Image (cartoon, rainbow, N blue to C red; front, side):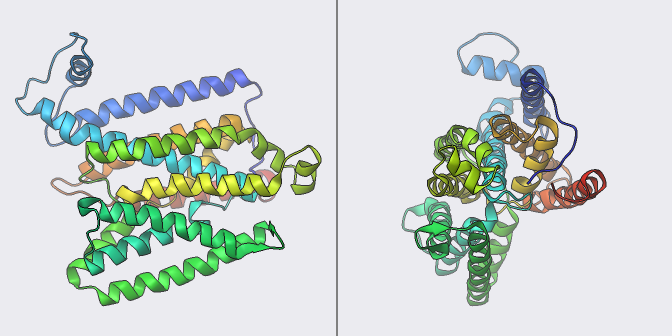
Amino acid sequence: MSVTLPLPATSSNRRIVLGVLGVLLLGSALLAAGTGQLHIPASEVIGSVMHKVGIGWGTLPSHPQGDATLWQVRFPRLVMAALVGAALGTAGAVMQGVFGNPLAEPGVVGVSSGAAVAAAAVIVFDWAFVGQWTIALAAFVGGLVTTFAVYLLSRDAGRTEVVTLVLTGVAVNAMAGAALAFLMFAGDTQAREEIVFWQMGSLNGARTEQVWVTLPIAAVGIVGATLIARKLDLLALGDKAARHVGVDVERLRVVAIVVVAVLTAAAVAFAGVIAFVGLIIPHLMRIIVGPGHRALVPASALGGALLLVLADLWARTAIAYADLPIGMLTSLVGGPIFFWLLRQARRNAGGWA
């Protein structure tokens, strides 16, 4: 399903939109890199990057701590925000394509709730199998395991119906919520605070090593989503029509769910649960570039990255010497936008088309 609104008519318009999104993302990244307690002019940010890649052009930061602030604090956080946003935006576009429903988002298949339970268990029981990476690894594995559990439980006679998958996801999410509540009850005050903060999402403390772990996983997921984009367009015709033109619907659903699980698990592993990105961004991009997934997937990736970069900038600068949970801010913005989209859809098409 998609919102029936005026759409760009040509592929050249879609390329222009993607180019504009790319420029806005670069501009937002430049703004975010220079903004903070230590202000660094855009020219010095560019100069620092140029010198880092071996091009002796531009002016280095004049402040003694400017270069270190950029490369040790802001750039890792900035790149992580873009990766997480791109992963969630892409996952949302794929989910809505697979389910044929504008209300679908990555959490439907349990990946976020499974990651939250696994991370909470590590926090409460103070496990440290791989040192400082234990929470992230547990969240990643927990998200994948929960997703595959939802898929396996929803299969019947070798096939998986969308409605059954959704209802199974609702049930598994409810059980995961109960498990999370028990873990919060079992933990001490510090553990509960850490779990609550992790559930609200934050990029505070993002490091270069985390970026190098997230980057290849997110890249593989986005490439995978791009490769199945054309088949998702055929799936929009309905299962029978898609099978008639040669699409293996069941296999496509499996691949799509794996792609969504990998993207979402990679996103939440270090950043925690960040709501509404995978729901709102594909909606907005579908209005701008149309329902075709070959344009929608990259547009959702760029739009998600842009949203998270700006949201993180807001999170760390809205209140002096405080770092707000980024998930709280995306929900604060996403809720009204979703309500507006719903009103527009009803006004223009009499409901979701």
